[in-house]
Amino acid sequence: MTPEEKMANRVLAIRKLTPPFDLEQLANHYGDLEFHDFPFAVDGVTVGIGGDAKPKILINASAPLTRRKFTLAHEIGHIIIPWHTGTIVSHIDPGEVGAAYLQMEAEANRFAAELLMPTNWLIEEFNRNANVEAYFRSVLSKVGASKEATFYKIFRSLPHPIVCVQIDSASRLVNAQRSFTAPYPPARETLISRACFHTDSRFESFEIDGQRYMSWVFVGRDIQEVDQRPWRDVYANILDDTDMRAYLQSINAILAAAFNKNKTRNEAEICGAIIRAFADRGDYQPVYQHPLFEQYVIKRVKELKRRG
Image 1 (spheres, rainbow, N blue to C red):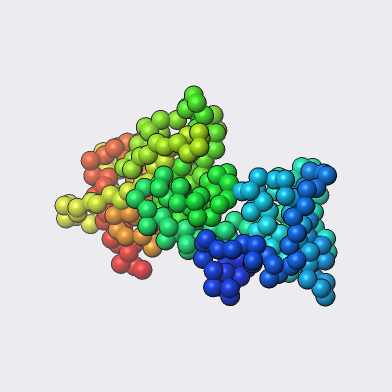
Image 2 (cartoon, helix red, strand yellow; image 1 turned 30 degrees about the vertical axis):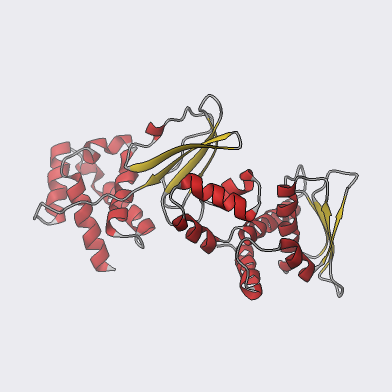
C-alpha cells in the first residue's frame, strides 16, 4: 500500500467512516467546499493548502456526479498529503504537463480511490457477494464512483485470484484488471472468450449499463497425495520421462515463486496458483502435462509449508 493510500485509511479510521459516507461533510471538515460552473476545462481547484486558514475547495459543478465525487476525494487528498502545498488545479485526466504535477495528481488519485473504496472494505464486500457481477454492482451503488474508477480499483488488492476484462461488441478486450495473485490478462484488442484461461476457474459474463465484462475467479486445486515417494524421486521421474533435466532449476524456481506469492493462502489455493504458473508456458508443457506433475506440486507445497 502506498503512503497516500495509508493516509486515506488513517482519515477513515480517525473519522470512523466506512462506505457509504457523506463525502461533502468530510470535505468541509478539511476545507471550505464550494461548487462552481468553471468557464474552463478543470475538475477542481484547491487554494491555500498548507496555510494558516482552511483551504478552499472548488469543484466543477457541471461535471457528472460520479466525476464530481472522485474529484472531491482527490482534492481532500491534496489537503491531506503533507508535501502538496499552495494552490493546485486538478485534472483527473491531465494532458501534457510537468512530471512533478503528474506525480501529485497520481498521488491524489490513489488517495481518492482508497478513500472511496478502502481495500479492507472491498475484501469484505467481495466476501459478502455471491459473484463478481454482484460485487461490482454493490460497490458502484454504495460508493457512487464511475464504472471506470470502480473497475480500476476493486480487483487490484483482493487476495483472491481474479481477472476481469471489459470487452467491446466484437468481444475484443478494451480494458483489464487483475488481482495480485491472478494470471496476467490477454493484450488489448485480443478476441476474448471463456476459454482464454485453461485452468480451473469460475467464469462469468455480464453487462452493466451497456458495458460488457467477463471475469474468472481462479479456484484451488485439491490434490490428494497418492505417490509415497519423496518429491525429489517424483521430480526425477518426470524429468527423465520428458527429457527436461536441463530445466531442473528453472522449474523449481517457477514453483517457488508461485508458492511465495501465495503462501498465505490455503493448500489447495497454493496448488492452483502453481499449476496456473505453468499452464501457459509452452516450453514446460511436457512437465505440466505429465501424469505425476500434480503429485510433484502437492509434495513441494507440503514441504515448503513445513519449512514455514
